[in-house]
Image 1 (cartoon, one colour):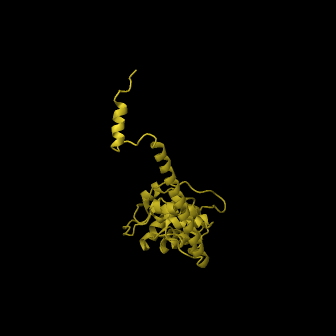
Image 2 (image 1 turned 90 degrees about the vertical axis):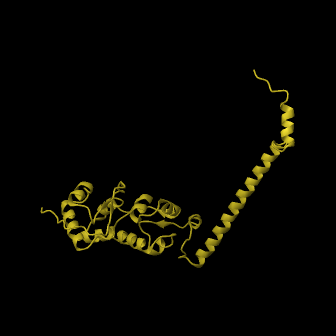
Image 3 (image 1 turned 135 degrees about the horizontal axis):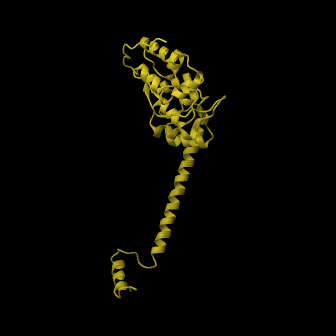
Length: 233
């Protein structure tokens, strides 16, 4: 079995004198001091967070429609009990979220009026084509309650350009659209490109369940669709 070298204590003493090692008896006290500093920093951070939350509560009391400006304010608002019911939210509710665009709010409301419901964060991210980090920052406030019969559809991140895809592509990639609806889609897009899911639902008179199943699977390029005409039945 190996033994410690007889010079080890001397070498350690030299290193301690040079400041390259803590002196014996001081290592434990240094660790305790670091732990105390960390605890003080955590307590100070918690106190700052409480002050920010209290300030936000005062702002909301004076202006209930206050728009939140950051993810920190979203967390504080959630701690104060505010929630956004995604499938029943008003324009004023949506516009309180940081960085949301009025056009995106308009799309959400038109789909809501058409009976479309969102089942989770992925639905919302795909529908609005937003960065995941931004949608995640809203998560503390969002509630996805399902209303009525049925259940949320399983979504896959496949996107078909409804303003450009051929009839065969539509048939192959979007089996949820019947032959009649595909023909109507091809005729309608010759008149004008579809703008978004709400526009598609209105012009094709699609039921909410079909629109829900298209979320995250389609996109809307604005170029010309070409001269293709629907095939005769």
